[in-house]
Image 1 (tube, rainbow, N blue to C red):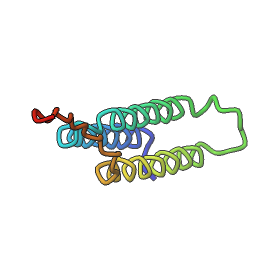
Image 2: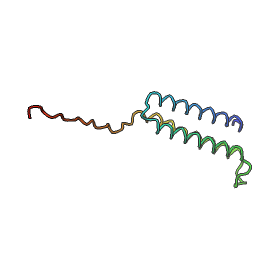
Image 3: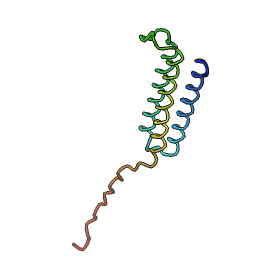
Image 4: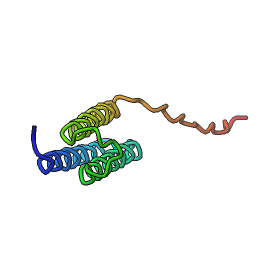
Amino acid sequence: MSSVKDLKKEINNLTEAFASDGFGLIMLHPDKREDVISLISDAITLRNNQVYKLNHLREETDPDKKIKNRVHDIRKEYFGTMDKLFQELSDLPAKKTAPKKKTVKKEKDPEE
């Protein structure tokens, strides 16, 4: 079991990697910008919540649960959620949006 300090570093590094992948995807698919920014925002919010929990392990309301178990739960929740976010990010380019209809103006026939 790694220390809390090491887990915080892992969380920060993975969140940074996710954001980097997201910005790379925006460069390749500018039309997916809003979706990618939303996912990055979710990852940062998750990161902030998990680091907060790690910083306040002793203040939790369940005194019967060992700190080691709390850290394990935080790790499991973070990596599980990040796995889902990475999957959503990788699925974005495959999602097709409805193509815009091209309107063709009909010109008047000069013979009419």
